[in-house]
Amino acid sequence: MVKSLGTKIVHALAIFSVIIFSILMLKVVSQYTSFEKNVAFLAFKQQVVNNPYWLTFFYIHIFSITLCLLAGLTQFSNQFLMENRKLHRIIGKIYVYNILIINVPACFVLGLFSNGGLIGITGFLIQDILWAYCTIAAVLLVKKGNIAGHRNYMILSYAVTTTAITFRIIKNLFYNEQYHDYQLFYGINVWLALFINVLIAYLVVKKSQNTLSSQVKIINKNSKDDKQDQRK
Image 1 (cartoon, helix red, strand yellow):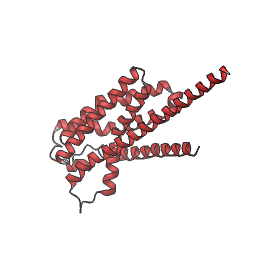
Image 2 (cartoon, one colour):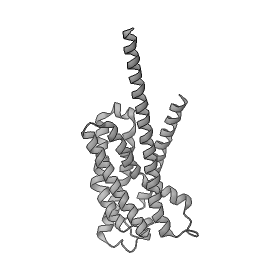
Image 3 (spheres, helix red, strand yellow):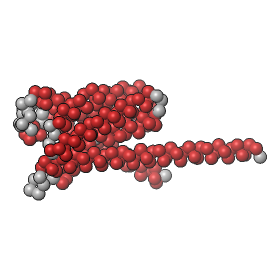
Image 4 (cartoon, helix red, strand yellow):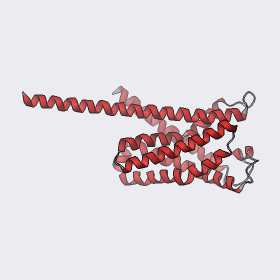
């Protein structure tokens, strides 16, 4: 009972955190609605802001990523799934299309011009490939009826999605321009955010698999006991 309550509290805090940071992301996004080329992050990208392809992909990414965060958030509630199966599928499709058609291509282009030098560029490209792989795997598995596998890969996909949040948390907590080289810190932060999120996702998946395995053992044991009782 205590363990169950603790799990529910952790889940609630995680959901609350993502909602709060999604709202903060909206605030960040609002800075770019003027389409000026010297605001916020664009001030650090003056060498590419006049490239129409880069700038187009930047706006595509920045204006769609919050929808991706919020859409993914609804997909891991069992209660929501049971009560809103049709809506679950619709939101799931929005999430998948958002990633595969909009953000993966956009982030690939942006990654080629990433801050952080070679460390940052390779980190973003690996993140982009992993994002596409996990999302495609989740889709293929649900089409085959493998719900458990689908859920696991969706967790991994969403872990990559939320690296944007983890990246900003680390930067806001630890970056100090007086002591850190911006490019080096940025590049390391890309990898660190990805590692933290994938590790957490792996632990969540592992825990759910262990829970499922325990439940199966209990069911098998009860079934075996029932058969023995019938023989007596």
